[in-house]
Length: 224
Image (cartoon, rainbow, N blue to C red; front, side):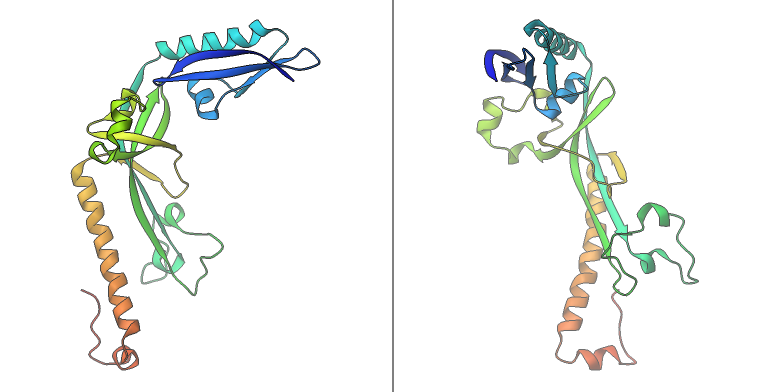
């Protein structure tokens, strides 16, 4: 397969070079990054054609239409929560109304060892004509000045003092996605602190030299 031409485009402040090859059978082809293909609205990231112009026309049209599209950005928070069966039941053994949404049915989640998994992350959401893309976000002051000064990250991925660093996808455990606010993050941190307190309490209790005495005591005090 021989390279016959390199196409150049500007995409998100970067010069993108796309080599076009031709096979011994006269088939012209090129490949572009998967995320770029998604943003350009292409069904596949591998393009084929019987003529060079077949490939060029598809890319030229896709890049032109991309530049005409409406792009909106906003900050979001993705919340992840999963719990095993006994943490999803009430005192009567009935499943919580949100059982199906948050029940952890993974292989390691057996009934003898109950687990809770909780966390969140801040994302930059980029919407291009209604199609959403997500980026792990960092506060602007946490991003290298070289990256910002050289405009390696386009302005479309900078919002409200945050910068979208790496492309990401929403995990199957991140069932709640909400608009970002400082109060939301403050309250989520409060929940994490309560879980951290429980973890520290158990760590101290079970590592104590007199743990057996404490665990069978009539004066046993639970975590407040």
